[in-house]
Image 1: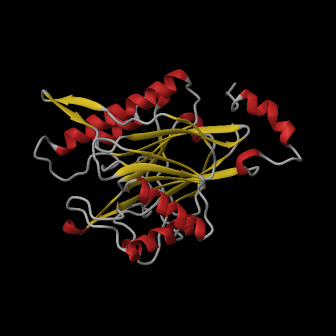
Image 2: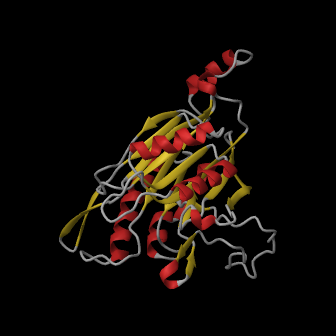
Image 3: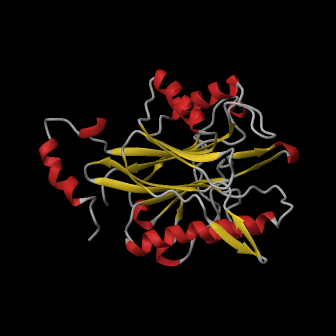
Amino acid sequence: MRRSGIGLWTLLGALWVGVGLPWGWSAAETFTVASFNLENYLESPRGNRPAKPAESKSKVRESLLAIRADVVALQEIGDLDALHNLRGALQRQGLDYPHWEHVRGHDAILFVGVLSRYPIVARRPHTNEQFLLQGRRFQVNRGFAEVDIQVNPHYTFTLITAHLKSRRESASADQADLREQEALLLREKVDARLAATPDANLVVLGDLNDTKDSRTLRILRGRGKLALVDTRPAERNGDNHPSAGRALDARRITWTYYYAKEDRYDRLDYILLSPGLAREWLPEGTYVFALPNWGLASDHRPVVAAFAAEER
């Protein structure tokens, strides 16, 4: 039988009936989670990276206001001022994220973060992850943010967001090898969580900077009973034709990133689910957000997934 939330919350749930839920909770039956790489969301120039233009910031907010996800994982967010200024601007436009996380890795300019409507009840930031490659020690540039989020008195899930090594060439090592090592460390976090609680509600999401059949994604998805489920968000453009064969995905528009130098569109942003959370997944509420002039906001498009807020 599946674990159904935290026993204390279950016990106290009845006491809250008629008197309201704590911390601004509503009796949510479903919730949505999104991931969005904001492309250099900086308040001021840092190194060789310019400040984010006001027009671009406005388009980021337009995207987030349209999605209205309950929880948003962010990549390429700047320092705490950048995060709080974004939160404040969204709040003034009617979208409040009172709970947040901001995690740095080796990179001192860009970070990962989380915005949440729901309380973050545990935090396990991974800020100093290291690995050996060809006799040299490397650090994970952006770190991993890991949080537990309490959606309602009876339902909690764990979120891990990452921004793995880009596909740009590196002078210190092969870019694919670096990314694969980061994926191995990230998978260790997943394995530790699922070893302790195989039915844990876990979502791993973010800019993984590789394609579906790459070694990076194969490492992270894993194999067997504890393999992660790829939600494969797609545009809501009316496409509903099934795949041409059992081994093929349906021909839907799933790209999330545009690389201007090569005029190339790729799916690099993912929402991956543990077997436990996959039971609550609502595919009909899962999509790539398509917006006119989307590129003003970022070179990435947001991905969104929906879930039932109850154990199944």
